[in-house]
Length: 77
Image (cartoon, rainbow, N blue to C red):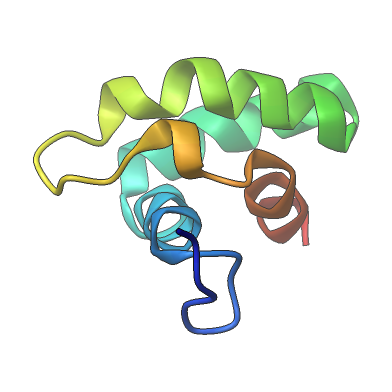
């Protein structure tokens, strides 16, 4: 069961965005990707879904529950 968390789809989505925006090495890695993808949200969402879980270990979030489109849109903003 998914419930909204802090304005996000769910806790897992919020947590993935938190990792992405607050871990310097992760942030800059994906910032370069945004430039290469020219802000294409679906392509960035696919990239985040496939690669972000490798960076974010140990906190127990479930990458399968993440709304990757929402994370990508937030990151591009």
